Image (cartoon, rainbow, N blue to C red):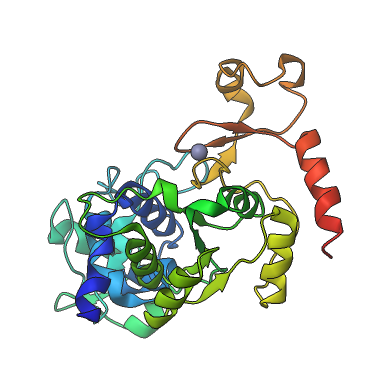
Length: 297
Ligand SMILES: [Zn+2]
């Protein structure tokens, strides 16, 4: 039963869009001349290779596969091509490709990778591994504010209210614990019973005792969660997706937002959420946060 329940969350929870974006983000990091595996991407994202098939499905939906060898893969402006032909099976078999296996082999060969009998030769030397990631969280509904702070500190934090349970068969506590187990996230909860049942599923869990966000962060430190205590512009505090720097040529993005002071445009760095479009900059809010965080150091 345990194995079965661990396979379900990605189907049951409405996380597919976010998951796919995270997968494709990793695919973009595979350098030319290297390959990685579906399992390696799963391990990087979830801490376990169990999600390899889900990764395979996400890769198969790549909207921008590379069509011609090396097309658009060098230098700036290379996007939006996402080189998913560099993802192969864990035994070195090249696996499938949206545009056909022959095309995949051709693309890899052009990048200097030797293929013999449908497999990558010198597989161990050619395999690209991602650097170990930082901790990731999932939080219960009582911890919305803490979720916001963790995202501002750069942590991938899924908030319970953002997980849509498709068919009310499973209760939310169970879904949260299963989700945390599947994605190897640390579960943060105010609920003693949820903490206990999650631990039974092997989930790393911190039961938060206090209601004020700064003391909640202190609790995490006390539980030896290694927290960065500087705000970093990498993640949307609203929706948890990645944010990216707004280029000088993209001022229209800023002008569209009534909350962006027009006199700041062109004078500061701005970031925009790739999913919800929210715009960020280092304003007084960040300075206040920095001051508060100093007290934790
Ligand atoms: Zn967002």
